[in-house]
Image 1: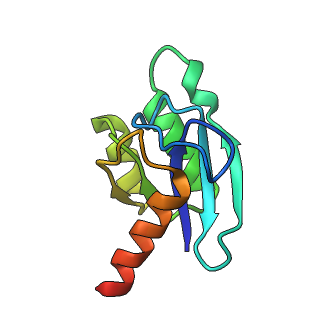
Image 2 (image 1 turned 180 degrees about the vertical axis):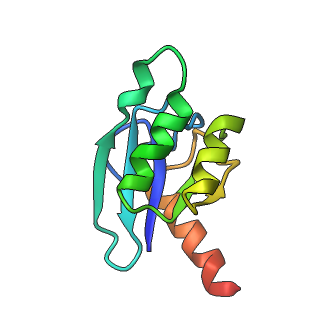
Length: 110
């Protein structure tokens, strides 16, 4: 499964970004191998529509789950249309690798 995580940097040791549409990077993590691709969020700089633009980006990268702090209404609509599961509420004090591991351990308990 591919997991997209909003991030402040391009590594698994970077902190989770609490903002979806305005995060600096998305880390697209393969849950099987834990290999990842750091993708710059081009929508970060645009005036309006950053959330839907960011949603389009991670949907095109094949993400199935999103881990983030907060998602706005328009972005949430776009993500749901793209079939993504949204897991929000992450704080900017959590490392990306810890957010992914916590999510996967919860999945394994279900």
